[in-house]
Image (tube, rainbow, N blue to C red; front, side, top):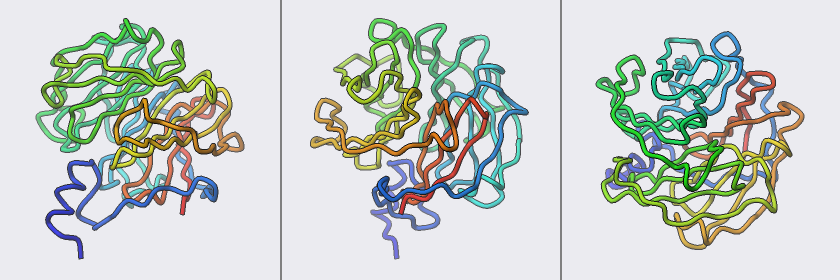
Length: 279
């Protein structure tokens, strides 16, 4: 049975505690497509990044054709085939080329990365996980480091954030002196992935920060890296790749189930989310 201490750690890592899920690193070498998918084309024809609520009952997509964050309900947690559209929230007043999306683990904040402004936009949600309750708060420029930003991730305690870029072909790491407050962010360092990817899109960290996964648009791969020092991207080393080309030719985002047993890949050729098994 999961302990209260484990629940606290899992909550901080943004993974669900209600079901008692414990993360196991995905086995990409043996990953396989579940023949399960869900189209988002009705809501957006240029989907860029996806994000799941920690209990797997909601999935969110940020789209560049609608300039909005789109919210879907899943009647069966983590089963993408059970998704249904609920509502959306326009970010067009702040960003007309949204690319990245991330939520604070308690659902009270939302972050949208943009290519037109080369910045990160922070929103407060008065009702957790309800995008209709979002209100714009502030932004942070990343233009000095990256002019074609694509993917976004945060350390679970909100003291670090990471941005992928296809102009620099790298990952940029920032420190936040006040957790989850992007106005306190400062650039720390970057890590080049150009040896494996010239068009890196989205990124995902395991809860411990010692594994990083990147979606490569050009080669249609999920790339796995090990970090010898947790959350320090300068300590990254390449491990292996998983090909998504049989399902999607232009993948833009990836996400993993809270226990690591499922992987989800979003693509904007078919405007579809695909589900894979990784154990």
